[in-house]
Length: 163
Image 1 (cartoon, helix red, strand yellow):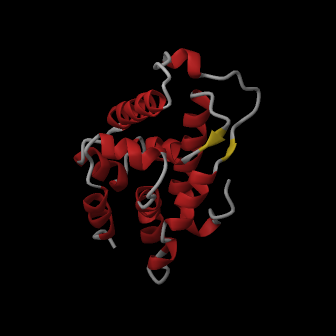
Image 2: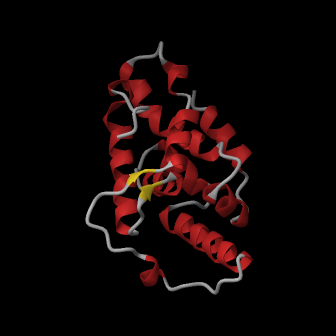
Image 3: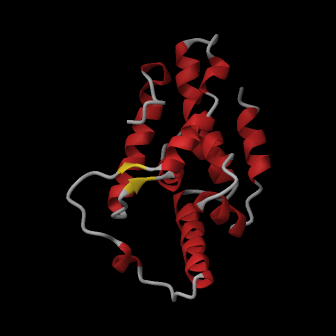
């Protein structure tokens, strides 16, 4: 796991990060990226997933937004969309850690609740990781959410209100 995940953050966030690894592996990705973390958070069943769902971003909604982003990015490069099954690479090993997930986890302000009880910190660590994903200005996730018409600032404000 990325070095940014320490024991203090708890089992829930670690479980979500393992879910991100599974999302990346299922898609044949060479690296675990922020979009895989976003998908794993949406499937986590906690307060962060509920906040995403309220914004229309359940797991299927996020997959649809990512599909639109991929199609538009390919079109911008003059490439016709490719069927999902053709995009999956054959992999023998688990994916490595990509830059966007490392940056997302570094943007998650996990220290803000340091004085609170461990259970409370652990319970909101996934929301903090989601804020880190949403704060990216460049990349796949911000483009996908923009295409989906999601107000990232409003979503961040809702998550920060949990503090």
